[in-house]
Length: 126
Image 1 (cartoon, one colour):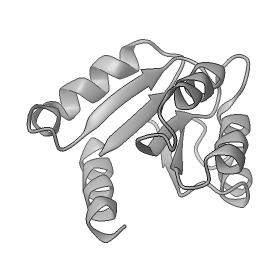
Image 2: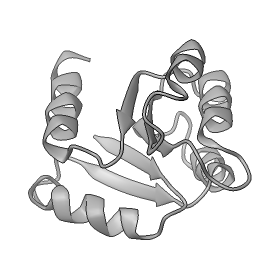
Image 3: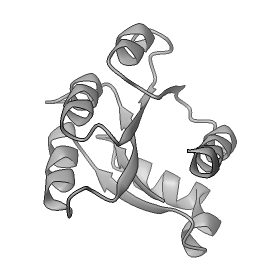
Image 4: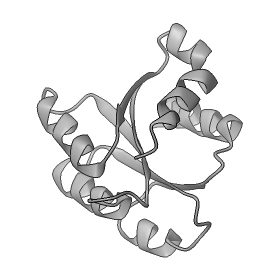
């Protein structure tokens, strides 16, 4: 399963690689990372068509294109990709995110046990 994580905080990559160490090693999950919405869209456009990414986990508050703008662009250009929003701002953006097509909404700090369970449940059940 190919998952893209989009967050302007550089330490997020290390955090995900630590929490999913076993799954990465067993090739159950393959992460790519982008530091902005613009970078994420460019990576998707550079991939073979359709992109291999099945899920994007995106922060909402980022400089430039924010996560909600990215969500709308992905749902327009790549409708098969599921998008989950991640924010430190509790439920402030929940309604906007869900109305724009978000598949999930997580708050920081991320509960990685819950995230793992949901990722692999979706992989099994589609």
